[in-house]
Amino acid sequence: MAAVAEVLSTVASRPDPRGCDLPTCPVCADSMVAAEASAYLHDNVISYLWTCDTCGYGFVTKHSVKRFACN
Image 1 (tube, rainbow, N blue to C red):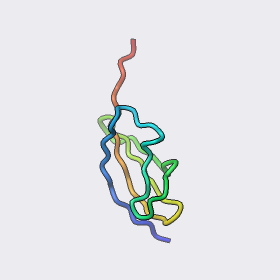
Image 2 (tube, one colour; image 1 turned 90 degrees about the horizontal axis):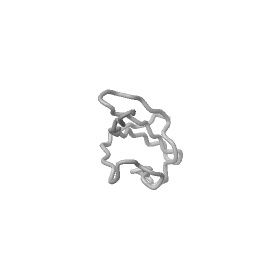
Image 3 (cartoon, one colour; image 1 turned 135 degrees about the horizontal axis):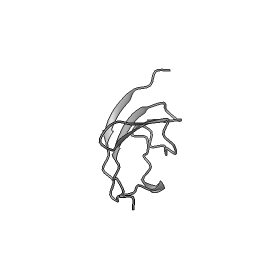
Image 4 (cartoon, rainbow, N blue to C red; image 1 turned 135 degrees about the vertical axis):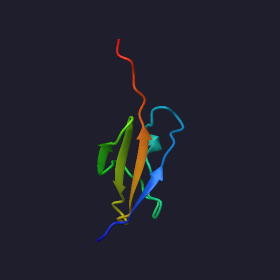
């Protein structure tokens, strides 16, 4: 089965996303628990590949990560 992928931009309402901020499938509204893959892109941006277990729809989210100062 071929999966369709779409890039969706995400903006976190809080600095640190939590479990309640996990995406739902835009096609069938099923809950998504874990990303299928992730990749560090550049400038503290992480990309996540999500694939719905129910309908097979795939999409990508991108998140910016803040750097913390080490003391």
